[in-house]
Length: 339
Image (cartoon, helix red, strand yellow):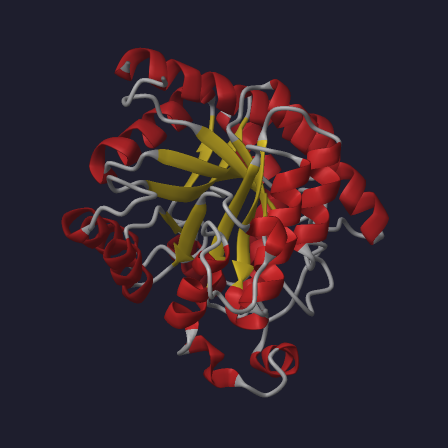
């Protein structure tokens, strides 16, 4: 059994397209990175659900999960997450159940209530039934029920899912998700990598008010963070400009591809945009292994999180792989000290 003090480290990917790149290339890179982090000892590889965004390839996470699981061997593969109001709980149970049958013991199911897109696209996805967001708790219970052992008299059944113990995680960036996670006794994943405002308050509430459940006996919090590690602070900050340019698109309401790094971000953003991004990306750890280790250790100590979900967007794959390898070393050193 893994020591309770050990902090697993995992990876979140959106299959971001580079400039002048098509989706096929982005998917190939996604698989390549999954294989790379598996070799480095990462715990999970999750893909998100986003729609109507030109630079985001992760629009069909269950399909992408199947492709990744087929080309890896050990690493857990999951959705971070499935936006449940966009889908029928029955369909999600059938598809995730099928994946778990194909890749036993390797599938995770992260669930969120956000649309993963703009409101117009959400309305199309949900066929005009925007009240599905309010129905999220009921849909979540329906989804869970499809994974129970069969009982006589049950109506509609998701046959591939019945009796399976697929771990479910609740995703969020607000107090409402913290309350629901605590009430239902579910592991909680916070999107601190781009929505940090309620992170500390939400994680504290979750821990203090957690009610144990059959599937989760104690609170289990995961924080998603941006991490870029390089041999020097200067190189790390230079590599990070690709990520910052992409994140700038969020502020501007656009979907920017991953662009080559630049020497001077002041030529790209305004002072107001720089300030807003600094706040939005406050849980970003960019620098040498030593400085990043210090930052992540402080995060773990101050929040009591049980796992870190890392996302790393770097233009050149060789630099990205090096950063992920250095991050694995950082986490192993943290675990060695803490353990």
